[in-house]
Length: 284
Image 1: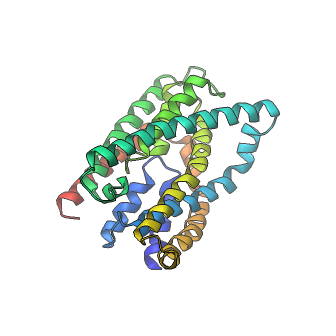
Image 2: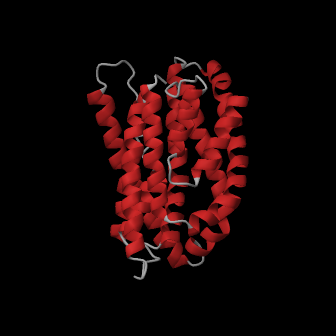
Image 3: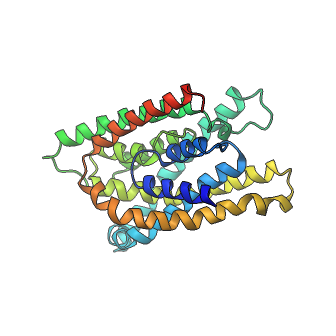
């Protein structure tokens, strides 16, 4: 219970920030002596995301209703953008996962990309790449501050965001929100619009991600449903705690995120990558 509460707080604090909440949760798990690659732990990670996504929906619903649901035309444009971006995410992310599992991990029985989630060295590299990407996008945004950014996404913009999101799926540390919002900034999307679209994409992405981890847990239990509930119970508790932690964090983080300079998050990611690399070197 204590582990779940701690991980839920970490997830709740990091979810809204483009600093890879998954990387922070995995590091916390390693420091507590847990195995982030175990099926029940990867399910817990996804369910923590589910809890914070529910908090995001509750907190941002009025803002999203004005942005996406105020007219039939707006809703149609939003729906097309979400569907196309999600399809591209599935094609890119699914293709990378298939390559990793079928080619790079072909010698391992029951190969799942989640088996790499306890590799702090890989997480450090992914976080550093995300940090550089965010830093570049933030500096670009600062230079273009006087220019008029688009509030409505064009097909080229939401296709780019969807494809970049696909790159983030297999790699813990490659911040999904950081990469997608940065892509929006680099393609001249207004910051608030990029954030709204990024989190809306996450809401759509979370259910299939949870379904994948439930199936992986089912396989690890040798297709016996009897062992599923005890193994999944921590994840159900994690949803509740992450939802509450996420709501509390959103109240004071969201305004700061709106006014903060984007490139600062890139600097943070680079610093966090160094710390995680040190933890890997120290034997965690």
